[in-house]
Amino acid sequence: MGETRNAYRILVGKPEGKRPQGKTRRRWVDSIRMGIREIGWDGMHWIDLAQDRDQWRALVNTGCIMNTAKGTKRENGIESESIQSNRIRPIKITAVGDGMVGKTCLLITYVSKRFPTEYVPTVFDNYADNITVDGQDFNMTLWDTAGQEDYERLRPLSYPNTDCFLLCYSISSRTSYENVVSKWCPELKHHMPHVPIVLVGTKIDLREEDPECISFAEGKKLKQKIRAARYVECSAIKGEGLQDVFTEAIRAVMKKPPTVRRTCSFF
Image (cartoon, rainbow, N blue to C red; front, top):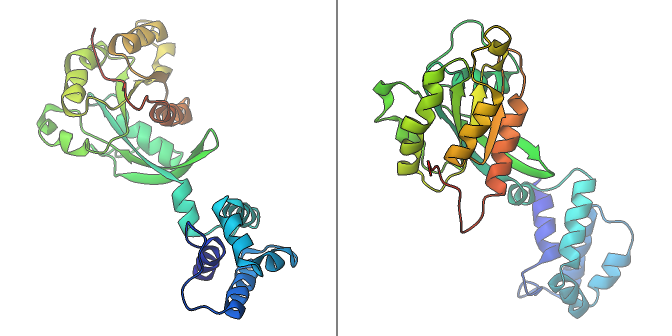
């Protein structure tokens, strides 16, 4: 992998396309030949082009060499770690909401593909994984928080660098629904006013048992009231809507206006 990275640097060169000082013409062509072989380009065409350094520099400056190298390396499955890191965007997603609304079960089930039937920790361990949304690769880090009052002073320590909040309530708990406005929005607005929010209604499987559960329409109304970026419903125990939660969170981050940002509001 290190040889591939070096080959890429040799082929692309510096932004102005100049070769390193002190290299002879022969060494220059040999280095290009080595790079071409390592990257996997076919034929003598590129080596012939390298014979004329002015022509090669022109190709570098127009992006021709860089784009061809990237494309060939992707096709051959040997794209370097440095190029991959440039293409993968890190995103931090933090789940908040009242205790017992299912935040931790949501995260554990999404990560492990299995609903926890035994011990469920108060706070889920941080987790990172790569995910592709709309053709773009992301390194998604998930952070859990405890909703109980005992953690009010510690909880905000998890907020810095968050790109999107999952503000969760249980559709079977009217109190958790009301606390979105009375407790959670003020807290998020105070600490992280410019971060988009995805409102998440959890435990939707309980609607089958209790007709008094909060309706989808009520969830949408709350989403409009707090000006959340998205509203998504899910059931961790049935595995419904879990992927949508994180896909929509990433989309909320990507579609966030660069200057006029979404904020939690009651007006």
